[in-house]
Length: 85
Image (cartoon, rainbow, N blue to C red; front, side):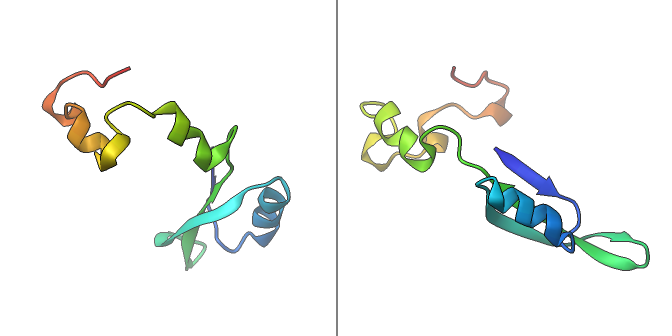
């Protein structure tokens, strides 16, 4: 799950998300201008379920094994084809 904090100066919001288990995932610098100043957007990420380790067992035996990337294993959504379910 991703939390988007619309102003990087909002330290209280970031601390609250960290206390709830989120971690800093990225910062988008100078993405807006408000009240006479440039603002940044902060992305916080909260793992769901087992987090990063969940996919290793789930995709064992599929096209992901052996280093194939999802983009090379499935048809392109941009080509107008349906994404696999």
